[in-house]
Image 1: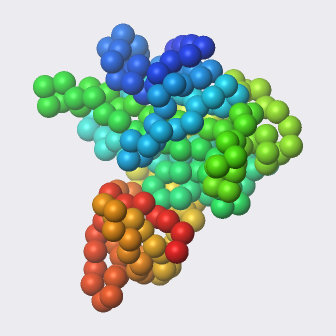
Image 2: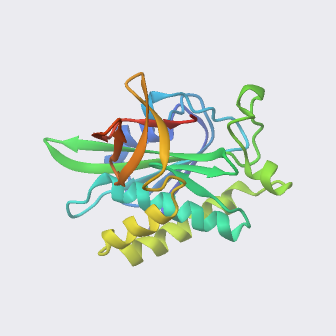
Length: 237
């Protein structure tokens, strides 16, 4: 049961790093939630501002069979969108796993793995969501919070509990239906096949048509050339 073991800490460097270092001490489904992170991070090792008032947590998965880590990324992303809908917030996903509302980022997901002698030991999904925390002035054009969207403060642990319930339900539904999960995740994406997008790839800016969207890559048509890209960031054109 995801969240049956819940550890709450007032301040920590990173909930992901804590579980990566201590995964053997905790059962499958353990959740670590922090009031403040001092070294939160997102994709491309970017700093994730994690002050008091936000929801910063990580979930420990110890799969018994070979499961691709992105299964859990999609599982959590889909569950967050469904939880937000229950809170009257209509969210979409920016490929692959950022949660957006009205063109602004509300939450992000970072999935990391731990291997032991070439065997997958643990998958850790870190989630950061702006809830009641203030958005820095320099980020107000790009980020939002639940408080800003709804106009009232939320009890953070109640939001966490709702998300965990959605994850548990999705896990029961999709544990043997990964293709169905991928379809649901794809339908929640802002990006669509046939759409023109701009991307950053290793510092190079490209513009092209999305030919195919997969959970770990996007195939773009750039000047009649097909490019299958996995390490990319979708940016404004």
